[in-house]
Length: 220
Image (cartoon, rainbow, N blue to C red; front, top):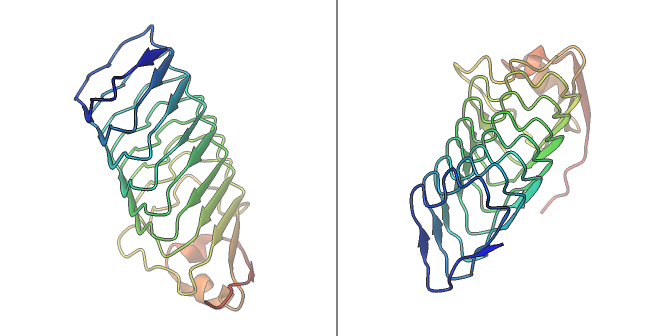
């Protein structure tokens, strides 16, 4: 295990990039920022716990960390940058914070073991290829109104269920390929009760052949 001193506030760009022998890193609560490619291609890294003090994770920070199986993003993180966890081929579980507003392009590209993803209510944007080639992804849950860019779920052929709690389906405008790669004749789209006709008429959403309005929204 490598223990980062508790005097460190920022883990700099490429700080541990390509350190093939590191298997575990202990990050202290003093750290607020993990910068670009800080742990990229640490191919032996199996365990890492992100401190609650963390407010920023840079692009490609954990790209190519092929042995990490689970990770929990702290609540102070509002955006996941491009390629942050790209190529984490054994990542099975990712817990996204309620504070998250956006997921960058290719953020989880080729996370081939990921089976379920729950998008927080405050997340408003998912960029292109964010979950591209997550070939074992089966369930996607949107807890709010989300704008999904083209090819965000490219090559996610095994998705069988999408759940959305949005009472008014998001107009995808020119992003007609937002769910390209998902088999829309097999995948069930679960929507709020009484909104089936709305989804069946809205571009992109209407491509799903199995729209089921079985989600009951509690009034706040």
